[in-house]
Length: 197
Image 1 (cartoon, rainbow, N blue to C red):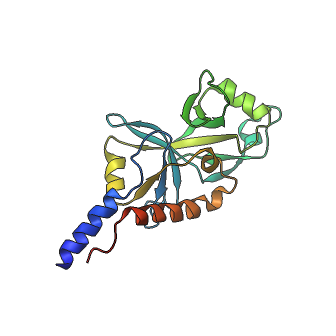
Image 2: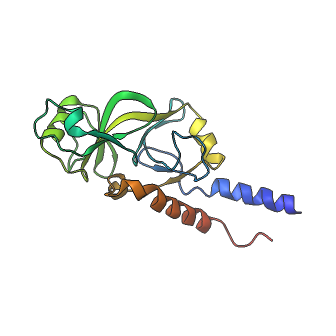
């Protein structure tokens, strides 16, 4: 009988992830996730295709490299850090920027948050001294092969949640995982019905 209860509990936990993965959703790493590349991370999904795979940016890993050092030729660059977007392609630079209107060379992800790899837009944002609540630069990205992320979610490695621009540009990224992890646990707890036995 206890095996049936455990099986039912596991099935409910698998289906209790609040959301399905899609662009603009956030992945919150399970506290038991053993991969050091993703331990205690919060990842914004920036590309999602069942046939092509998934790409994301880790939101809560600041590097020691300031924008002023990463863009030495750009006047007005601030001391705000470049973020480590993931373990893949560390030389690939992407930026998240909040824009009031659709901009060429920028892809809308959620709300007014856009992704860009456009050098001119990134350098204009750096030189304007854009506030980190509206603009952040990421080196590298996280990537999953088709079906890989879904399998990891099913195993309980990630919880998928909706989160808006405030979470994406959170002012305290060092504590973001702790706060969103609590939220993810409460979402899962609400999704599980009353006692099983």
